[in-house]
Image 1: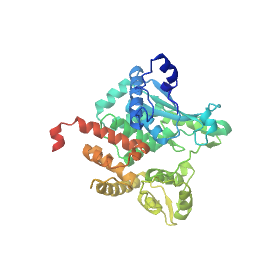
Image 2: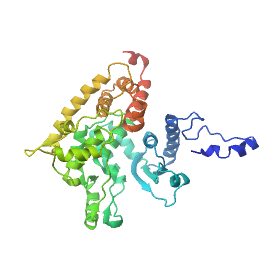
Image 3: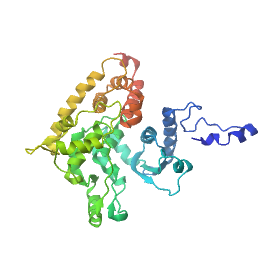
Image 4: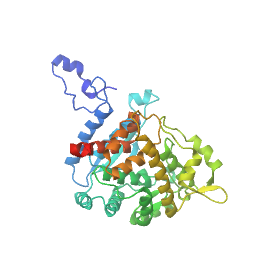
Length: 391
């Protein structure tokens, strides 16, 4: 890659005046800038945009890179600056760059990221509520109002807005609390049950009731709804894939183990460090089986019981990771997420930092949520008085 600050190097050498490239946000060995330095520089830029924008204002970022770790760094920098992600979609510029045209490994389209600065009045009310349940639902309501609505594309296809997926709404709610140093007031089953009570679900997307009425009108005109591909890389994505396969609202339905097994294997692209449970264990822990041997989605009341049992199992496994000092090579990501989540609730920042220091660096490049927990735990730990940390 050619860095912008280096393009005029020969000309500047002749003039004897050089560009100051210290604040240039790049990944460059010669400048001694890796991914952490790149993320910090991007965060500084986004913080300035956040300062200049009025509350409720929007920022659009055009992003192009073939590495998932760089995308996660950009996303984390945007969130740490205080913005909320509202939409991510591809931009087809018709004409590719030289690298896009000549390289088979290059990404052919750019990503367009839309993010907004939360309204000042809402931010004040939210912080005053100190991480209450009502504050969490108020955040979801105002966030849904900022998200794009599905549109009718060519061929009568209705676009799917990924940010409206229940699991992403939960992730955004968690991130909003943690970035502001607050406890998360809702567990995952409480959140998903509350979504069904307070909002409307259509085709795997969540809407406010007025938005759902608009969507219903558009759905009549559409022939089909876009289905985004979902690859299985870890336990979390495996559960999402199974939920989609078994959910009648998303084109699935009750299925036997043998029906699921072949399709599951086709979509499996496991991360090297992920200790992924067997398919049967995933089904036992998250779904129910009928008399005909078919697996199906549990209703919200039973889902809460299943989640509580699974959470206990994950926390027991996380307790094993807190012992010892050697680097962890293989582990269950869901156990680490559950452990970090519980430690954050208990304000046990030291445990988060200790386990984070034993995880491979690539984990944080692949999982922005774990990076968020670890970074914020370090900030809180550094802010504690020394005497308190020694207790």
